[in-house]
Amino acid sequence: MSAVRTGTPRGLRALRSVRAAQRGLGYLALTLLALAMIYPYIWSITASFKTDRQIYNGNPLDLVPRPLIFANYVRAWTVVPFGRFLANSFFLSTLVPLIALSVSTLAGYSFARLRFRGRDAIFMALLGVMMLPGHITLIPNYVLMRYLHWINTYLALIIPPAFGSGTVFNTFFMRQYFLSIPKELEDAATIDGCSTLGVFTRIILPNSKPALAALAIISFKGEWNAFLWPLVVINSMKMMPIQVGLSYFQGNIGSSWGVLLAGSTLAIAPLIVVFLFFQRYFVSSMLTSGLAGK
Amino acid sequence: MSARVSKLARREALTGWLFILPLLAGVTIFTYAAVAYSAEISLTRWDLLTPAKFVGLENYANIFQDTDFRDCFLNTLFFVVTMVPLGIVCSMGLAIALNRRLKGLSFYRSAFYLPSITSTVAVGMVWLWIFNPDQGVLNAFLRLVGMANPPRWLESVIWAKPALVILRLWQASGYYMLMYLAGLQGIPAELYEAAELDGASAWGKIRHITVPLLSNTTFFVSTLLTIEAFNIFEAIYVMTKGSPGGSTNTLLYYIYTRAFQSSPPRMGYAAAMAWVLFVILFVVTLLQFGVRRKQEEVGL
Image (cartoon, rainbow over all chains, first blue to last red; front, top):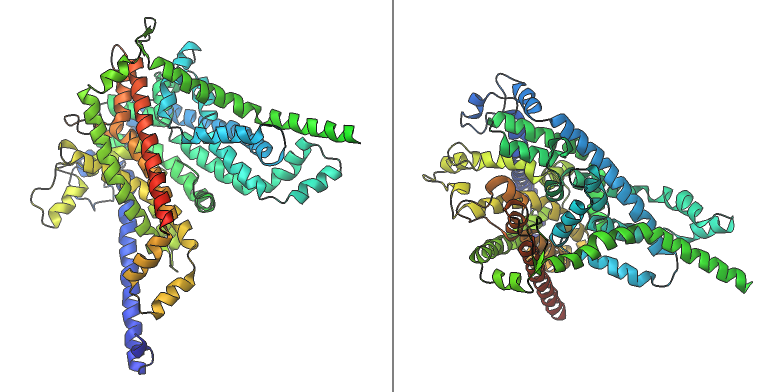
């Protein structure tokens, strides 16, 4: 190694071209791997515009629909109310995170800054909730929904998820974030006669936009992909969010591959669009907290 | 003056309680009370139509004689012992590959991360097609590289579980890769420079610097992967329904079918199984923490 480094210009040039070749191979390998990772999406999306005859031709690299048809989407859209599924999911994926974030931001601020007896004990007890696997509360909460006559209602899709372990995680996340905001800012506002609520809305919230954005985007994703709970509490098609509707479609409508993949594409596309727009927040929240999501 | 201070402190305490009240109320109902209620249900026989009948520990006794439960436990265990190490290797590998000055870094990172944000229900269809033994991409590829009789994947008792492991690795690796990327940022570059001066190879640097210094992240990732593997559900529901021959029936899927898909529903039995799964997970997590402490004692 060191012999080459101090050697002739020709040795240096040889080393450089070896390095360049290595780099090139590295890029090639990474690019192939990346294409393999997104291949299922590419295949699924292109196949949803293909005729079944083309789908079955057995050539995995035949990715251009010939002819390009929309019949699969028309059919998927008419056999089940996909529009309704998507509307339900957009509604839930906005409202549930909104409630969850309001609840957890208030609580997170209280745990970070306000002093009262029992605060830290309650905080520890809440952390325990994050360790609890979700399946343990599935059956009792389902029974509770039946008792309240909330089966097949939006209430069942909104209230329990808005107070689930995800919300506890958000509280923890926001508390850590609030602790990183300099306390002098708040003290100055208090001296100027600001109330606690005023400090919270005028100082704390405007300074927490990155954290709130990261949590909002992750909660949106979580709610968009929610499956087991809605599966259990909803059985009327009108109320189904997209994942449950899609699985109902897959399981009960005997249909062709093209139509099934058109359905999958309808469920994936909105999330991929959101991801591409807000990528920065997805990645930064993961890198800073090392935990968010799921 | 002191009266004023105590009045302010009282106000602060009151505001503090008001701010945590919504969260506390919600968690008390939907978690604390639910956990207690779940324990109560697990001591009964209950079909939801007639009143629950108290049967003591009968459900728990039955679990240990239920061969279906044993099979589901072994299937779940298969997912845990394969997904956890393979998940660690894949996600750490991806992170190491991306942890350098690369053109188009964000493209690669997004491509690897994307599968972890799309739902299993939606990608399940494509993967059914990929695993299709006759027309699927995977076997087309395997035949291309010379395998005459590639596995019949989801139709085969032996290969159905590995197929689901492949799907879950595709989904999860990018997510844990981000955690490893965060961990890699904490390793000082001087360590690698010093190793290079000593003539260490690329592999040597990974083995003696990167892997040991990532052990905190690895511990964290392995804990999360374990929980995830124990709770595998959606892939089963969408792709196999536990078939072929019960070879992909897992604990959570079994609990779900007993509570919500059998007639009459067996709520008590399902709740008892949920508790057994919880205890298993708890013990495994404790073991992991114990191992981690041992590792830390020897300076890892």
